[in-house]
Image (cartoon, rainbow, N blue to C red):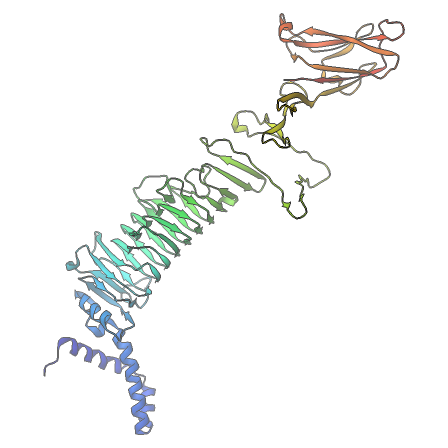
Length: 551
């Protein structure tokens, strides 16, 4: 009975494999009794046979790449005694889609400087632009996928991959349409130390059933001179992108409809290959759906925008970023909080409506006690300074208000005592609110006035605020400025005399300009005093002056 070509190939393969048995082991087997020798020989034969059957050469694959080896892969995948398909060094042409029936696909590893030690899988012309492998097992590693052509890209797919519980490690993909395509979602999917050179898309996740990919891990991979790197057509939650390189890409490095609760650590983006620049290093197609993520130590140069460390918050990563030496907590909808070595500041994009920055102490519900908020200097001296960003055009001058909220019992209306620096005039002006029994809100002025202590000779504290502070007539002291220099608008002035025998006798206001009486605008005023007993003009030894400017 004539043997088939495949049977002859298997016998030749087995003879070559048996010739590789260790010489010492064979000698030991010959020295044993006949029964032990037969048992050991049978065990070795069975072990070798199992190893041999996993080898794709056993099933008739052509390692020269001149003929189609897909039939050998199909037979091996269908065999019930094959655990993993081992692809030894060589070039293997695949002319039809091979369903691996859940079997692993493993090569010999990749050589750095030569191809002779690599296992290279190439599309045969009969495959067209189809899929090379589908239905692989939990592991694919140590292989090379390439076109076998000197120029041009093959438009097919190297691996149509199951999305669950998969490890693809140390695999090289070159010049194809898709390196890896997952039709469903990714769950516990690990892509480790793989390279994608000249690809249309390195990794494509279609999510055909409309679910969400989770726990996908991309670690130590490299994407070079490809159109796109990692593309999720829909959503991804809880993914990890770590120590990957995206270099000279035309399109997106990482893209999804939305990205939540994912980590980006130590990745590198460099250069664009005829694509639009600058371009976000990570992009979501649903507006502002890049939330609750973490980023650290990422680098974007030459055409890539770092969405983790951007000063613009719309479209940037929401979550916590440590990139740029600062901690940025962002919601990606226009505002963020940034902690740098010397500041804690809230930031907002131009379109974002005003939102408060809240610093809140802890509260104990058990003891009904609220812990204090403490502003502490490193030494016994120092100041709390209120200023504003010079880029806002106010030259660093703060013109905001301090607001103290209050609420009347049984009333939902919140009232505020409002205090603000009186720019252009001394002191701080405020307004306090009061609700009467009828529910009417009443307002009164409050604030911090300016104080002057005048003594004979005009040398008291605060007197030097005025350009002129001197006795101008018997029993009269003038406080004023030159014409047009300072305008005191309707001040509230209080005078108290330290001398018991002298009384304050009124104030004379000095007009700031012609017609200023209408606006109650003054350049200064004269304070009059009289002797209590005689009623005659007389100066005290000292008096106190407080000046409050309502506006």
